[in-house]
Image (cartoon, rainbow, N blue to C red; front, side, top):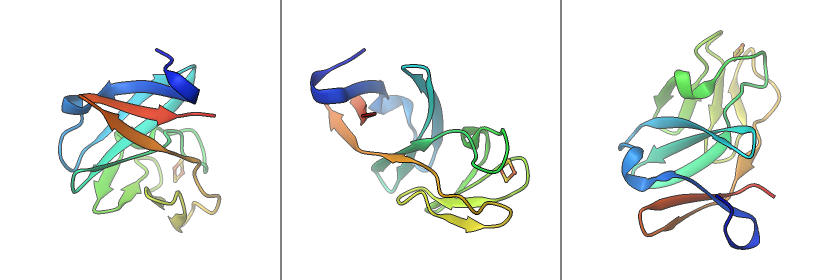
Length: 106
Ligand code: FES
């Protein structure tokens, strides 16, 4: 669903549990949503090392660990923090509107 100025509803806020990660597809793009102490962040869901979905990985405080080779990224900045990942992840602005998590893709 498209909303104003490029914001797209990604999920219900209540679908993302505390400390959890949720994979969604928005406009054909695979996006991972993360809850860090109640704040929501969004990055690309596909690892920059090879094809694996980070939403199938393990969220360890503010880092997501890839399920395939255990590379890591800071979900707040997208920065690659552990090998074999060297390329950073794309991040997206997030806002909460009522019970909706919205992501700005453009
Ligand atoms: S595919 Fe993610 S670390 Fe290799």
